[in-house]
Each structure stands twice: as C-alpha cells, then as structure tokens.
Image (cartoon, rainbow, N blue to C red; front, side):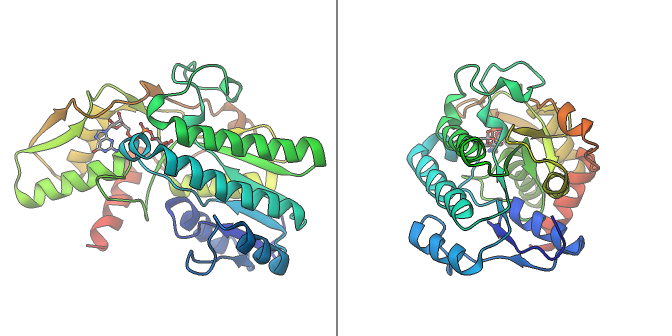
Length: 308
Ligand code: GFB
C-alpha cells in the first residue's frame, strides 16, 4: 500500500473507522475517501455501485457495520443479520468489480464457537455451535469472511479478514441499552459517582471473561496488516490477556473514583463464558499491542468526560 493510494474507509465515524482514519492520517496517507451515511447508504447496492464506479478506490477498508452489546444483539437478530449482510455484500462485490487491489474486512471474536479452546486460535472457526446471544451478528460476519475467501479463491482477490477481540476507546457508544460492557460500566460508574449513589448495577454474574483491546491498537494492527499481510486466512487481533467482568467493574470503579458497591442483575445474560484470542499469528508477523487496559480506560474516561 502506497501513501498516495486512494483508500475508501467505510464506517469512518464509528469506533473502529474513526480510529483507522486517525491512524491513516497520522501515517501520512493523503487520499482517504470517506462518505457520511447521509451521502452514501451502504445498504443500497445501486448507490454503492455508483460510488465505486466513480471513485475506483485502490484499497477498501470495511469498518462499517451494525454493532451493539449483548442486549441489542440478543433482541434484534433480524436487524443485525440483514444490515451487516447488505453492507458487506455490497462493498465486497463492488470492490472486486471496480478493481480494488486490496480489501480489509473486519470480523469479530464472536465468530468463534461458544466453547472454543482458549485462547482461541484462528483454526477454531466453524468448529462448533455459536453463542446464541450474538448468533445473528456472528453468522453475518462469517458470511463476510467466506465471501472474501471466495473472491480470493475464485478470482485471486487480495481480500483479508481481521478478527478483533472486544474493543473500546474514543467514539464508543455509551447508550446503556445498546453499548458494550466497558463503555456501559464507565458511564454507570461516572453517573453513580456524580449522583452519590451507593450501588452500581452490573449485568449477569460477573464471572464471564473478556479480552479488551483499545481501538487505537486495533487501528495500528489494521494499517500494519494492510502493509504486511496478503492471505485470505483470517487473523486475530487482541491483547492476549483477559479479565472477568467483576474485575473489569472493580478496575473501572477505581479509575472513575466510584466508592460504592457493585450489585448484580442476574436477569441479564452472561453470554459466552470466555473469549480470549490466540494472537500468536499476528505476533509472529511483528505486531504487538501497546496500550494496557488501565491506561486505555483512563484515556477513554478522559475522552468521555471531555464530551460531557
Ligand atoms: O460487551 P458485551 O455487551 O458483549 O457484554 P459480549 C460482555 C459481558 O459484560 C456480558 C456483561 O457478560 C454482560 O452480561 N455486562 C455487565 C454488561 N454489565 C453490563 C452492561 O451494563 N452492559 C453490557 N453491554 N454488558 C458482544 C457481542 O458480546 O461482543 C457482539 O454481542 C460483539 O456481537 C462483541 O461480537 C465483541 O462480549 O458478550
């Protein structure tokens, strides 16, 4: 990838896309194309075709997706399945038809079976049943991986698929009904502290384990892979370390300065018991995460407070 290649970054306003945009700009890529949703509806195949025919980007980064936390995924399977299939089908096909040299598709660690070996190697894909709370999203992402691999296999396309673990950072969604756990707990701890509340409500049992990667580390990994990885085989990106939800809630309380108690809402689902990625493949290529969980939460909390 050259610094003057035209790069279409789909989803540039989201958590992942905005981090990739910052990284591309700071690395000196000068021709990054973006379109707000009001100008280009990625679920509309004709609009996507017209855009690609006109711009013919050399590189495509597919960071646009309908995403959400455990509750939204569990309650809106139709929307998660349809929107993601539409967006990725339109973009992957148009990228091939208009001659893109390389495409990076972002998947998710939820593509792996509920009871995958831990840490989860890339080879665990399709080795068992999925976690039901995010099955629709996972099926869409698996279809995206398979479409990229099919283009590579049948037509020799250089379409790569990157599987990030649970992400957080600036531009995360802090809406309690649809957010992921880290943003939700930051907001809940902040609000509880401000209100002088005695308890902070955490969903589930606190025993599930998750791995959290700061989105700036993911963005660095994506740019690294755009420059150094040309295989249709999926590749994991994570930190290699996980924490229980209880430990996460305690760490966030400490960083925010909330001194009350944690209370547990057992009516909410736990989801998959553990989701830790095996990152030996990307490490063997020479990439490592730089931001510790504590530092990443401090930075994200600073960003959250600055926007209040
Ligand atoms: O981050 P999260 O919503 O999604 O939840 P998943 C992770 C864990 O945190 C679950 C618990 O065990 C939740 O029950 N949790 C505790 C909370 N308190 C809260 C809270 O206030 N809000 C939320 N949201 N969770 C997602 C998938 O699964 O992972 C997506 O649904 C995506 O498809 C993403 O793949 C990476 O980690 O369970």
